[in-house]
Image 1 (tube, one colour):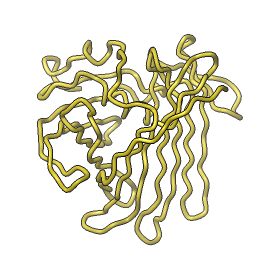
Image 2: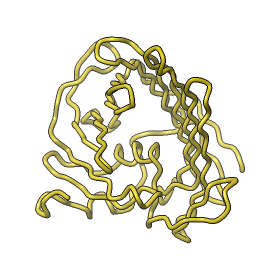
Image 3: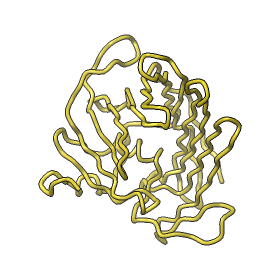
Image 4: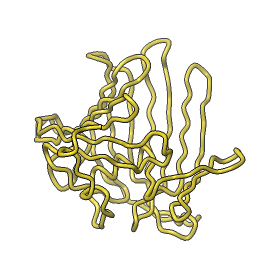
Length: 237
């Protein structure tokens, strides 16, 4: 645990309030590199608004494929997050590697502080205001991050991975679409000895311009190459 004087929990534990720095239709495209070598692509999007168990919710999606020879993978993540209270309600993860499929779908019930996996009997305790890993990325975009501060969050829906430690190490220049550079907030997110790094543009959009993700074959860097907006739609569930 970081020293107590560095931990500021209240700012990030407060409920996020609209308007958010993202909207339905936002689509971000990335190129993935392992060191200097291109190894794949990824796309992250706010696909639509849905009704999830009577609650209006964002549907976030992330898909990608790539990796070095022998480690080729494809993955799909889908997250449904309440648009008002910003809590995960449903999460689906599918990973395919060397023909082997690893797939899990979760129903998350914040009001009962429980979650369950579809097709698996029983349920488990979840924290207050739970978030899945994709929802966490959008949560950080909207949170009042401050340079030089660290935050300890008990919000990942699987309680054994908490606390999630978020540290804002400074401002650094990073490339954005259009061949220009802009100031970004450099953020470290760690849990159970693993750390991911994200660079958010230091503006109202808080675009994740770059992500550094630890994987079994090495640390992969996702660099934003296109940020577009398409017409979004709503659907019932």
